[in-house]
Length: 351
Ligand code: 13P
Ligand code: SF4
Image 1 (cartoon, rainbow, N blue to C red):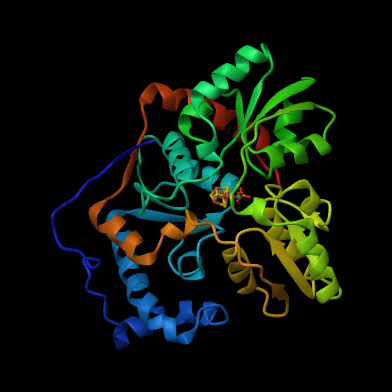
Image 2: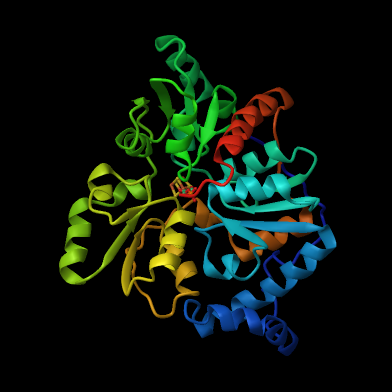
């Protein structure tokens, strides 16, 4: 992805002077605080509220929409996001929105996907450091070498990749439609990139042979089956819902496996008394807001990339229109084709 640094030169609220928590700000944000009070300590609210208030005004001024992944912190997820969801939902929403400016509160590949699907829009990412260990594990040249080694075998690529990798692929998938996408091709073998564990999960759920790459999510690879067995002993009756980026011994302990949106839907549908969401840490906070009656056991594995996004950086992004995502047009056309093929297959899919 190429990222344009644009600096208006004007001073902004984030130039070092914290915004003030005034009675007007308190009143304007009171309804948001009511929603998140179970997961955001009262002492933190005077820090977040002035940014939430200012971001709302700048969104209107810019004609902007804020998209947030399910791993964003509650003050972002519940405070300023207009649309939220898993990777598939964010891609669909980016393709459909009428807004002129999209602020992606997520990681680079999500912002790139939004730009590919809405090339005429201004797509901003609030921090340049918001990468992904899966996206960093593979290059376009790696995909070309794999194709040489396995001629004629189609390449299915997880969206957690750069646009260059998508451009070398036949079709993309997310964790909510990976099995469906693989089976849609009507072939005996696919190359599945780059997440080894998601690929193994797909292989376990289809008759299609899956050729794997050894990319891993640095957050989900840390969970272990032993850790989950300990939870079962310590917390009787606990339900274990896991993301398919986890290692196989973790998934075999799980009562349910699904994308982040799938995990949320499964909590909504089954309303367990006690649950552990085996995924990034902020998810439980975000889901707990709607489920005060559910006890969430929270191992805290944070994604350092997702956590680069903060309210002050979102405000600066809107004020300065930074950091704008641009993609080489030829690469974008090929990458977009792979994402659009996925959206055709995955329309209406659940995780
Ligand atoms: P989903 O939200 O699509 O399940 O992806 C999880 C993830 O790790 C995104 O980076
Ligand atoms: Fe990448 Fe894992 Fe972070 Fe998602 S949670 S952005 S897959 S490193």
